[in-house]
Length: 276
Length: 153
Length: 126
Image 1 (tube, chains in turn yellow, orange, brown):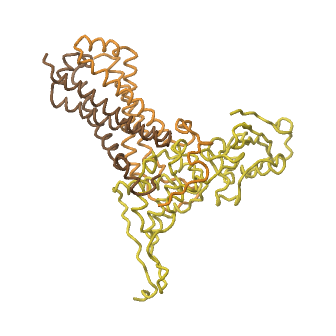
Image 2 (image 1 turned 180 degrees about the horizontal axis):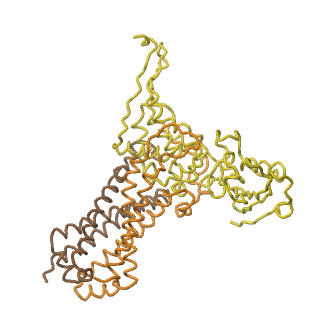
Image 3 (image 1 turned 60 degrees about the vertical axis):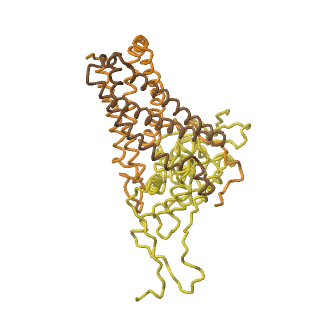
C-alpha cells in the first residue's frame, strides 16, 4: 500500500505565528483512504490551533470545517456516551471526543481508522461484523416470566448486590475499541471479540436470565471464549470501565464449573404478594 | 439457532492487523507483553522439545553416536541455547500457572460500579506480580544455568 | 461460531474439555520436568551426560516411566498450543481440518519416536 504525505496549505508550523498565548498548534495527521485498495492511501496533515481542553474530535472538526471538508469522520454525542468516534490515535484505539490533545503529549497527532474493522473511508469503519458477533450472544433476557398472558402485574426481584454482579458490563457503549485492541481479533474472523463475550457474561450473570446453559454452549467453541488469552488490551482501552477481560474470565470460570459465584434465578413477585 | 452473518464476506480481512497484532507487545501493558512472551516461548520450547527427542534418540546408536551428538551440543553456542531454554521454560511455566489462576478469575477482583477514571479492576498488581515473578525467576534460572554450564563443576 | 449445540459437539471433543487437558498437562509437565532436571544435578553436570550414566537412568523403570510421561504430557500440551495458534491464523474448514490432523499426527509421531528410544535403551544390557 503506497503511503504519501500530503501537506495542506499553511500546514507548515514555521509559517504560522502564535496569535494568542493560550493558543498553540499541533499537526494533525489524518489517514485518507477508501476500501478500494487500488486507490492507495495517504495521510493529510493539518495545522490545527488548540487550547487547553481541546480534544482530538475538536481538532478533527476544525480541520473538516476550515481546512478540508472531505474528511470522513463519524461522531455524535461528543461526551463518550454513544461510542461513535472510536479511532486509532497515536497507535492506540481511543474515543476522539474523550481524548484531550494535552494528554497525548506529542506535537503530531496521528488519526487512523480502527483496526480490525472493514474500512469505509478515511476514519469511518464498518461495524456490521461487530454487531453480528454481539447479536450471536443473544443479548437479551431469556426468561419464561413474566408471561404476557398473565393477568397480574409482576416483576423479577433483584437485590442491589445482584445488580452489582453485572452492572459494569451493561455500561458498554459498543464503541469497538476493545475489538480493535484484541490480538485474537487481529487474525481470527470467527472470534466474537471482547465486547460480545463480556455481553454474554452480562446476561449470564443477570439473575433474571434463565438461559445460562444455552449461553455457555454458544461460547464453548474452538473460536469462542477459549481463544481469549487474557492479553488485557480490551480492558486497557475501554473508556467506560466495563473491563471486558474480567467478564470473560468470570464466564470462563463458570464454563469450567469452578466458579465461586453461584447463580440463583430471580424470584417472580406478583402484585398480589405485596403485604403478604 | 439462527446465526447472524453480515452481507459482506464474514472472512473479510480488510484492515485486520493480522500477525502485527500478535507481534506487538507494546502500548497495552504487562498482560499484552505476557501474551506475546507466552507465544514466543511456547513455540521456542516446542521446537526445542522436538529437537531434544531427536537428540536423545542417539542413545540407540551406541556410545559413538551419543558422543558425536554431545560434540555438537556441548559447545559454547550449545550452552547459550540451553541457557535460553532454561529461561524460557521457567518463564512459560510460572506465567502459565499465573494464567491458570487469572483465566479462572482468581485474583482479578470483583465486578462493581465503575467510576472515573474507569480503571479496570482485572488489570491489578496482584495478578501482574505473577508476570514479574516469572521474569525474575527466569533470569535467576538463567544465571544459575550459566554458572553450571560455564562455571564448571 | 457454532450453529447449534450439536455443531459444538460434533468436533472431536468440546473445546472446554481440550483446554482442561491443556491446563492439566501443563501443570503435570511442570512437576515431571522439574524432577527430570533435578536428576542432572545429583552428580556433576558433565558426568551426568556420559553415555553409561544416561543409559543407567533409562534402565531404572521409574525414571523410564517419568520420561514417558514427560513425553506424552509435553507433546499434548505443546501441539495443542500450536493447534490453537494455527486455528487463529485462518478460519476455513479445510485449514481447520488440516490443523487438527497435522497436530494430532505430529503429536503421535513424536510420542512414538520418543517411546521407541525409551523402550530400546531400557532394554539395553551394558
